[in-house]
Image (cartoon, rainbow, N blue to C red; front, side):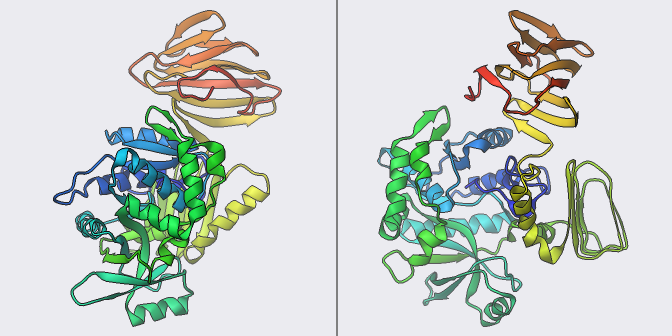
Length: 470
């Protein structure tokens, strides 16, 4: 499940580039880590399929590119036209898995978690697969290590030598209640990871939320397929009630014919829902500080400092989070990192854009970075991947000057085509049909200077497009 916007990890996480696709530590994103963890789950006696990814359609190329980096071909990417929470996402995956009469076991994982003990993670999920093979829904419960108020809990008991049976789901508690759970025992954090047969999920959904089941079936019946992309019917999916897996199904299962078994997950699990969680799993210095990027600390302790491009210095502070990006800086006490989402809400209600996209915006053909802007002009740095091209397009309100910094550019301008190399330039008049392509084997970088009365991204008319955006 690769949806979600990750508002509590702003300003690094934005609507256009949410947290699951971020590299917060190491060299791979949370999404890539999740895919690789699940790919290692190969219980004896079971065949395994390629991953099935459910993602918002706006992020389809982010997911595709990151899977390509892993040299891993997915079974398919199911594209949600609108966000509808996790129950509809799992339902689409279950309907896809049931196609052709099969009934595979689904290992369902969010794409924004970490597990520092991969072997223990693989072994625990292997046990969960065995429970699911017997008809149960298997939930991964994390043994709590502290009175955490940011997670939901499950209460369970073990009968004889059998697996643990989930008796109750509990909402995120206050601190006193979380401390009591820890003291009493029998409570685990709800990881959001669960395993069951596709048919069991659909049967439980039909039992507890037939409205969601019916709406998801209608959206699936209206689907269209485009290469590896499966697009559910847009209007039909928009009519699906938005609900989480827990509320729609799992919390209703105890005491019914749909039993939930729990497998302890002692694998260094963490749900990176807020900056404090990122600090908890990060490598730290002797003072408990976790840093990334160009950071200088003086008399600081237990801080998380993330610098994206500039030098960030912290002096005489304890237990703070500092996150720097080219267009925003966020400073918070670590204990208040859950409230970062309130800043995102304020940006949204104020009509600002810093919560939606970074200054550097990724596109299927590469990226652009808006490095300067003023009255009637804008300057962008643009990178085009080898063999990629932008759409054949036209602008009503702006002209463009292109200067090649590195690589080779193939430029279509009206009925002319020319090839430019380093230090060469061209001019695209207002209203002229044009295209930029990279015919070479190295990345193409150009500087684009736009000038005109309106410079918004919506001033674009596409005539041809490799990526289906026409």
